[in-house]
Image 1: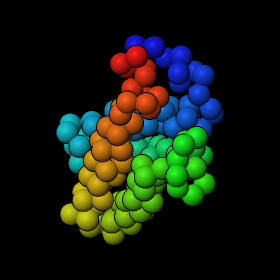
Image 2: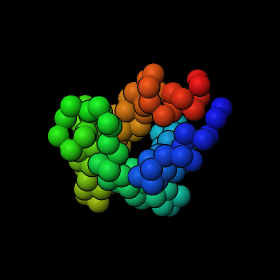
Image 3: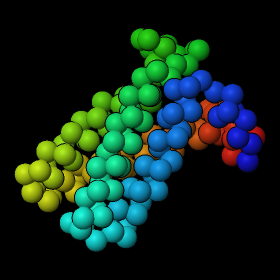
Image 4: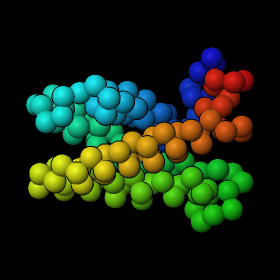
Length: 134
């Protein structure tokens, strides 16, 4: 593993990675191991949503030199509004005690914003691919 691509990357990319890694760890624990409804679950849930919000916003400042889309964005940026709407939905449904809606929103943010978008970040030519596979 070679971390120099991250260390040499722009500030938005560094912030993006610095927020998505703990969000992935917290999200995984929250889904698979936490006791739902506990004070720890609630506190980590707010932290997780804050991390995902920062991750989504920093993604808007990550541009590809060959991207054909507007503002230098690529198709992977479609996950930004999906993640932000998911964060909003998770907050609203938690505050209204809509357990099913909350679970669905949180799973959507986790699998859409982290698992799928994160998996795409490991495609050849991307920084994460370079870090892990050279």
